[in-house]
Length: 172
Image 1 (cartoon, rainbow, N blue to C red):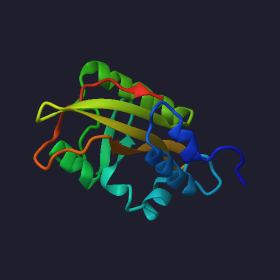
Image 2 (cartoon, rainbow, N blue to C red; image 1 turned 180 degrees about the horizontal axis):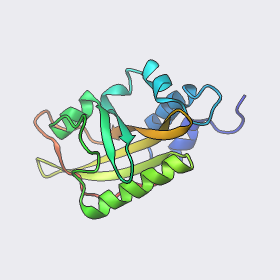
Image 3 (cartoon, rainbow, N blue to C red; image 1 turned 90 degrees about the vertical axis):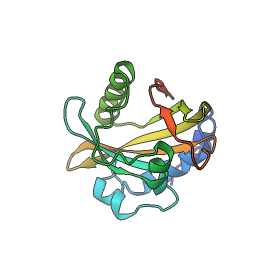
């Protein structure tokens, strides 16, 4: 039995990250079956419908290559396009792309998670706060994919999409 604070209560105290990220962490952790990092297969065999609309799975394919395997329907609506099978770094500027590649490499090598707070511009000129939690998944012995869950702090209007994706990450 785990002693100390629960993952949800820990997340609620970390730099404004929403407790829903702690719930997602608990779901990810439950798929690990007594190993440090769950397999991609275990995760996909036990998806939780509460998280899926705002979840993406990214396969890391080599030096900076990141292919989106799955892009949730809520994310499709938020961005106004489906990014499945697209390079996950393609829409970022050079600085943000380099940060994403660096954070992902560290996350897979340690392995560890990464919590981020971002602010995106929208098609209506608003700034929308978005929090995310990225966690590794493994195939075989190595962590080779990440699963990312997003929580939008502000609801987007029906005809509004996030357009400014070049904000640099604020890791927690």
